[in-house]
Length: 109
Image 1 (spheres, helix red, strand yellow):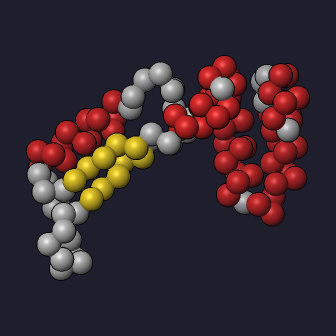
Image 2 (tube, one colour):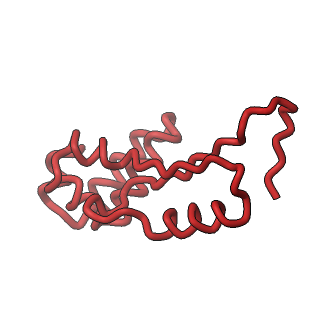
């Protein structure tokens, strides 16, 4: 049960976010199933599925996005550098050594 503790009569709004590095050419079946389930059990909740990775794919270009998304360690290293800014140098070294793609090592770092 979802409870709106705000005491206003505005509907509860929920955003389900598909994070990078999801495949850009397929929607998230998991988010779609969860949204459908929530519509059945909590019909008063307004649910939206959000796909911010599509903007990232557009910015990077589809080929580069696809290449990054296929390298799990590269994905993790990129986010670690963003989350832990004080460790950015260590993350760069990790990315240089860990990336399977020579092209990515040369262009992303």
